[in-house]
Length: 297
Image (cartoon, rainbow, N blue to C red; front, side, top):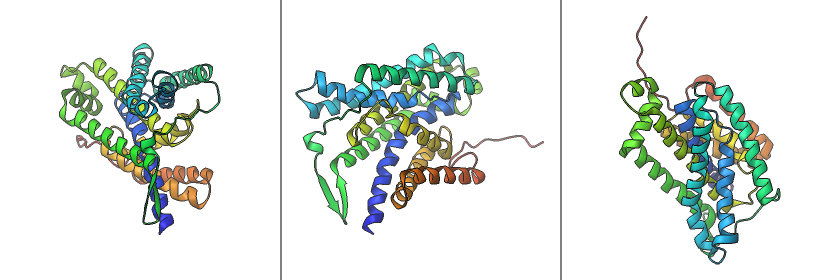
């Protein structure tokens, strides 16, 4: 029982990271059809933000540096995504293979830039004193760091939900995501909506990077470790559906944790792939898909 609860806790923590990463991808991929392989480097950029703050700007207040890092990482990664969309990707909408190749090249360039700035060695973000410690509940060790990450993810999801459902900008995003052509002829500025979408999706990756930096060492390959799993979350959850991404992240995260504990990390990833392939045979549009109406012929 203790082992089961422990694996479930680890799986939920992993799912929370995948949720932040996958949510940004489902916005950009679901709305614009852009396969952004550089999304992982936005995670990397966000992960380096608390490290830079702790070693330079806020070296005397490392606990405060972590709190400042979340909004700052959102802005840094968001601006990076916005520049990528404005300079390159806006010319390639409707050409997913081109976006895949271009963003893969951008990801390699960003990784090399990170190596030049921070070296190829992994870095550690100092855990603040208020996050050191743990609780023991039913034989499961609940570290304060992982609980804090879960809290950040919950608050971020609430913020995204409010933005998408209550604000005009979020409703415009939903309209373009469901039917771009109809939104365009209705007078919505789709180009501006695309820029907002890319900024938001990339910013969420930056927040995920800060969360990752609190769990373990960070490096130039930090984002690569999460990007593939995040794409699987997007596919299983359903493009552009917040509820679907949440369910898919929890499902794949817990599955990976249980299989990895019983076997190895390699077999855990293989089991997730096998599950996704089998799942798509029965639900090719994902857990949650848009409801559409068609004419009977």
